[in-house]
Image (cartoon, rainbow, N blue to C red):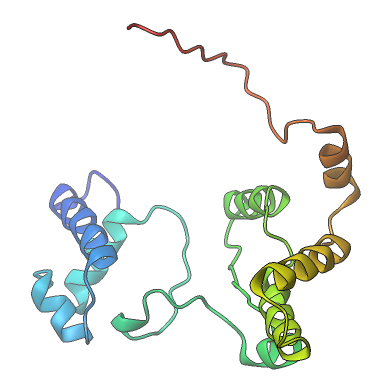
Length: 173
């Protein structure tokens, strides 16, 4: 929906209100969601979404109570047995955002951590939490994969990004 279209400002305000509500409120079903957010019909809801969403988006069919579920593929889940967060690339900006977030990701290998904790506790029930943590720390350092560029940054202790604007804090007290 373009800003020039009739009712845009009202729909956009409604979109911002719904976006805030959906993050803070759990809805048992779509009818409750519509009622509590003053959505009159499916067409009305589509107009609200069109006013607030500017780029192409993929909407997955789910219940309102599943708002925190990441999209996943059952086949990949059974094969990989790991956490996944499928992201749909719909334009170049989404692709650039995904690549930059992946390059700067700090918790690689974290899905294997859950398996290793259970395995270590099962193998060594006599160990206390400090010993288990030490064993897992060594295993993690030996198994985390990273690209050569990231390894160079890490070894050189170079920053991952730089800013052209210098910010200086001036104490006023």
